[in-house]
Image (cartoon, rainbow, N blue to C red; front, side, top):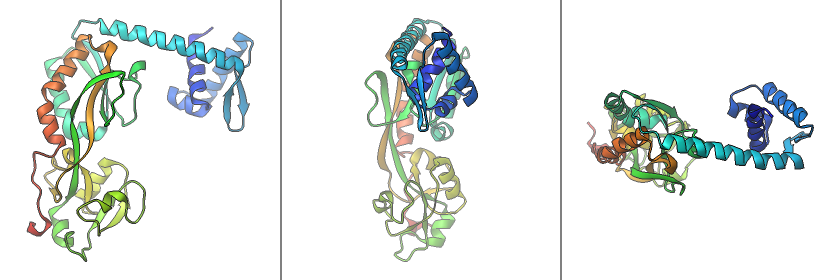
Amino acid sequence: MNWEDLKIFLAVGEASSMRSAAKELKISHSTVSRRIESLEAALSVKLFDRRSDGYRLTESGQELLSLALQTDESLHEFGRSVVGRDSALEGQVCVTIPDSVVVSLFMPLFQEFMQEHPGIQLKISDSVEVFDLSRREADVAIRFTNSPPDHLIGRCLGNVHQATYATPAYVRKHRPDKEKSSARWIGWGVPEDRPDWIKGSPFPHLGVAGHFDSIIIQHDATKRGVGMGYFPCFLGDSDPDLIRISEPAPSYDVWLLSHRDLRAAARMRAFRQFINHHIPEISAALEGAGAETVSPGDVM
């Protein structure tokens, strides 16, 4: 039995879709189909029923899936154990983290860490998706969550506070504090007239000027004077072109997480210790402690 075929079978079995499995594996749909057929021929058994709504495991497929999952977990457990015994300050540390946090907060820290540890390579995956640390999709995760998984170890770095930002020129022209203000929000989330986040904001009477679900795009639109942005303080406070016109409000905690099997690896431990050492400044930036809030009426 070809192990690569088994890995593809496992991906299809868990996804129940040839297309989504191909996307996850970063190979073509036809390659996935061909490898599944090869595995079925090698075993002389039908593993999937091909239906109009996708692939469904046969009884034999269910049996093989259970065995494949056990084998896959055993291999990952062995890999974590080997890495966990590694005592050298060299090699790669893969970190999954949202891109907006890297650009505005963590990049200087990553640069300093690499200068202190030239033998350690950082691989940054700029994603908000939940990577599976048990399967070594990443070694370390910096996640926005108020409920970190129990099987991971970590430390809270602080709480993300959000506030309203705009350019001084936009505030002077549109006066968002006035009842008949012409100011508009840079919208995100469900595109309705008055989303909940607007209702709970300091300016609930204002409408929306478009919807942009990327924080980076919201930030850029705010800088260009499209409207007012409501986003994390670590992003808004670091931009000299913007002013903060509402008090920071707490939202999600930020956690530094890794799998407990990797805690003894020297390079993982060095990275965690480095980030933990900088928690005071990280927490201050997350909570908006480095900037002042300006009343719209005081903007001249």
